[in-house]
Length: 436
Image 1 (tube, rainbow, N blue to C red):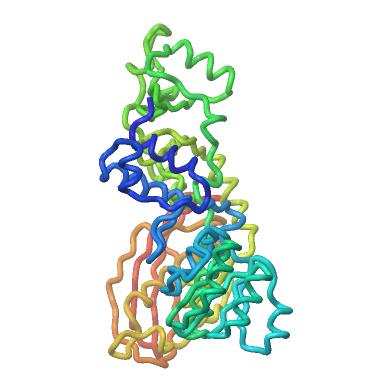
Image 2 (image 1 turned 60 degrees about the vertical axis):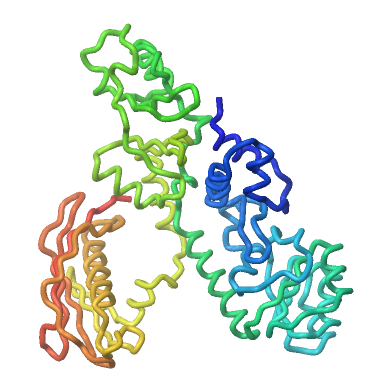
């Protein structure tokens, strides 16, 4: 039987898109405590089918698929620009295809607006009205209001009209930044994207016997199976090592490994791969917050995912990529050298290179050197910085990584940083190598 927490999640999932959700109302309707209702709503928000909007409340939204993750909902736009909704609340769950800045004549502006757009404009009432009529939402900058006629039209068409106190440039920058962040997230493959779902995962019950495990090994050509209770909660895992020496009549609960290592669907594949290599396991159960089994992740799933991401075009908007874009790489055989200059963005309040930036440069240089010798993803496990001197802004620096040791799974590199031939930084970096 489902727990109260699970019953609330199922109830929320069945609500129509756009429905407002209240902790008090759910607690009353399902006869649970407000604390239980609150925790379930937060879980639904984490899973992506509920959104909390300032001055509006919590709303049931459509869960976005991975291929559409870069698209923002109008509800998210409200939060990004610190806005408030003047009308069209029923359409907050909808996604925007593009945004248009209304800094032109009305006739010219309307050529760029179509259904699913977001018009960013000031207090131009006629533009508000025509944009809504063409199927676009409206974001009014400068904190201005609009007419009652436009608000009623927005409600009737279920198209949000939002007001923000920010100026047009700031609003556009905030939305653009959010879209960039989404694109980066889209490229980071998560466990939920590659796991083998529960419907395709053979499981054993604790009352099953070792004989059934033998049947499963022949049927599924595998030796590792999760063990669940009647509510599909994970209670153990059984492998060939657990079966050795036991009679076929022995029950699974007597031979299984209890409290196995697990992961969650919203963890990156790279992080889970690191966990599997570190712990020496081939099968990683994927569970939700209540330990209910969602699926499993195998070593083959991880390798396929890493091979796939290696072939994809990469976004250069993460902080390490932005930092390393200031450095020029020089390669001499199996040796690497990076030369660059300390830019103002790299400095701390004293005008010298920030220690975090220096560490990032050292780690990136070390991982790049390891990639020359081993094809794979480098996961730093130990970083020891044992020499660091201040380097002033606009000073040229040279970064030289030196390989100390490398094996199939691990590598160790010493990195030295020089300014005008003087040593200003040195670190030892040990990294795990996840082969592709």
